[in-house]
Length: 387
Ligand SMILES: Nc1ncnc2c1ncn2[C@@H]1O[C@H](COP(=O)(O)OP(=O)(O)O)[C@@H](O)[C@H]1O
Ligand SMILES: [Mg+2]
Image 1 (cartoon, rainbow, N blue to C red):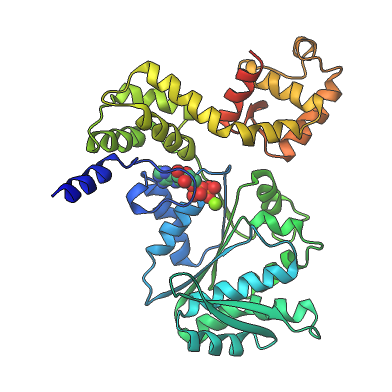
Image 2: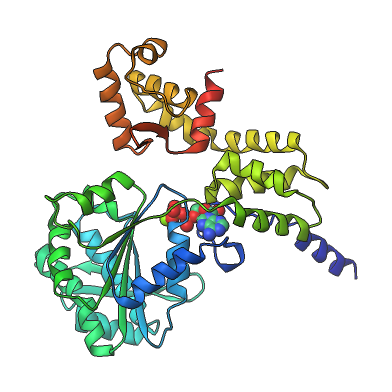
């Protein structure tokens, strides 16, 4: 009896908000329209470039859409390019995801690898929960290009042999710009042109890089697909999401208080979950405005290490410009004399150079000619540092 009660108490006391990592169905707020759009693109075999700032929920959305494709009709491969840094690691990651999407039975995986990537050397291991995983090595006497062509041709061959629809997702796609040459980008483009029936979804956090890849005429992937910027989640949906989770765990929060949270986070999923998580933690019964302020402090404290690392990596003029953008109203013109004067930026061209560098790092963004700091909490942190 005691044990049962303890277990019950433990369940009730678990924080119902989750931040960091992919969220599944039980922690997923809305995104109905985005999910429909994405599923339609996948079903039609369209090519799509999804881009949005970090931690806005790209991976969670994509994984949820992939999970809804019927397994008997679709083969869906998800490739995270984050840890790849050259053509070889791209090939290995791609071949691995294709093989694991094809089957989870070791024997079939090896047969598939032998049939589709005859020049690569597969090996199978079991992960912690006994799930087979395949890794690929390169045989030394084969140049990169033939291997690359083998993996790039695999999706259409898979479609032909299995008669299933094939969807390929490349996450953190901008990573391919780190490779030594644009070989992957070029070969991918030409193989996509021959694979009209395969749907390719590209997703990336470095917004300006992804936009450049699709919208710049000189790039191999110019107009290779539609583009889909992913925004924050509207406060209407957060109200029911946050309130129901507080209520289910015996705590009270009003709609206005959720709106206050959303004013801080602007509906950004990671920060909304993070702030709600911190607030839930410090609330015993009912939320108060004072507790919301304390929760914001807690989030800023937890992010302090990461924000300090970014700040310390910036040259002085970029810091000064960032401080100005953080503190001044959103319609301020940062090349105007009084702005330059107030933030010790010598000339307009000094400020322009700093803005260009900050735009390239996606630390700031430009909308209708005005700048804002991409990360809302980084902006708050900067303001606090300079009070
Ligand atoms: N639809 C959603 N509903 C609730 N929280 C979400 C949702 N999407 C993302 N999040 C929150 O944002 C965090 C980052 O999500 P993730 O999918 O990894 O973003 P990205 O791939 O854009 O970096 C998650 O850990 C979660 O806290
Ligand atoms: Mg992601």
